[in-house]
Image (cartoon, rainbow, N blue to C red; front, top):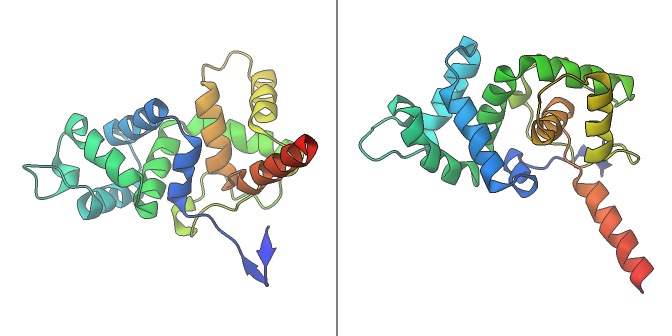
Length: 187
């Protein structure tokens, strides 16, 4: 874990927006909103945040609107509200339970530290840790996943997002280090 002045550093959940393409973000939100068989606590948490922060014209409660009508206002709120982001990612993760279990095993095999169990409630954390192990990047995780599961139909985006969700880590500090290294090489 990253420690600063004996405190843990976290990035808020909505920091994940910086790592997601708009079309993929829409797919993730649509998948979460359309999921019909979510575990009750996951559905309740998603509905709570939809009702609290998503304003759908014609509906007092955002969770009562049809999923296709919820998408645009949910995407708008997804940019700003970390609790909604964690609820959406939790629901999305439930729809990809096999990928979640497989990613947990991949990261465990690669000796990522301090992983929560695959089915843990990650929404209770305040956000993401800001770094990955130094030698890791999205390409390495995707390659390891494809090698372990050659017949899987998960997209590279799904694999990358699940690595973030299962590990509760964004490669923020890794990318800053890479940018600093590139800047010093150019000088």
